[in-house]
Amino acid sequence: MLPTVLGRLLISETKGVALVETALVAPFLALTIMGTVDVARYGAAKMKIQQAVNRGLEMSWMGGPTTVASDIQAQAAAQADVPTSAVTVTQTLECGGTETSWNTSSSPCASGEVARYTQIQISTNFTPSFALSPLTRLFGNSNGVIPISVTGVLRIQ
Image (cartoon, rainbow, N blue to C red; front, side):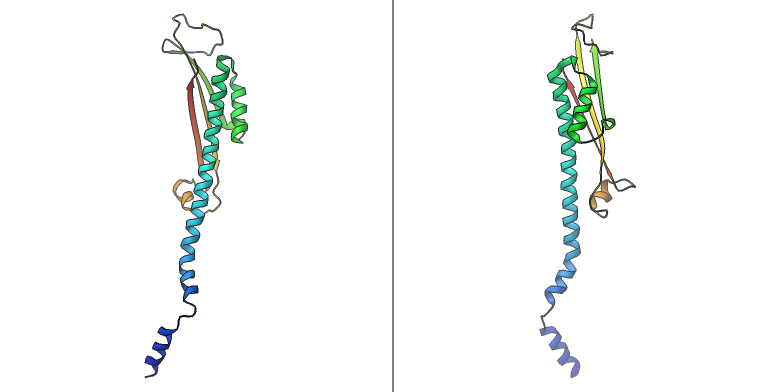
């Protein structure tokens, strides 16, 4: 008889249930919040790099063939808040479909078919705030960082 009375007392007792439920759900909520924060920060970092590439391409487009690659590189690096060594600027000239050296003269090709391209690539790393984040496990390397690389190409002539 004692076990049934004690069993009825335990079933009817509701104090502390919310605490137990919170203890069961809290780890899942924490992982969800940590993952959301890291995904948002990664998206912001990638967007910042993309905007820096776009800024460099805009500078190349506005300056035309006289714009120096080192100026574009410095501007894109400053915009992305990365060292200039993380930014690669490649300027190419095509004459009738054949790639030749970059030249600032008005008509460098005998055929007159000129196409000038500027390509910008920025490579950097993103370090998530939470080492156990799902983002780190999916995309991170052995050091726990996620590489970000953005490339843009624009024909300016």
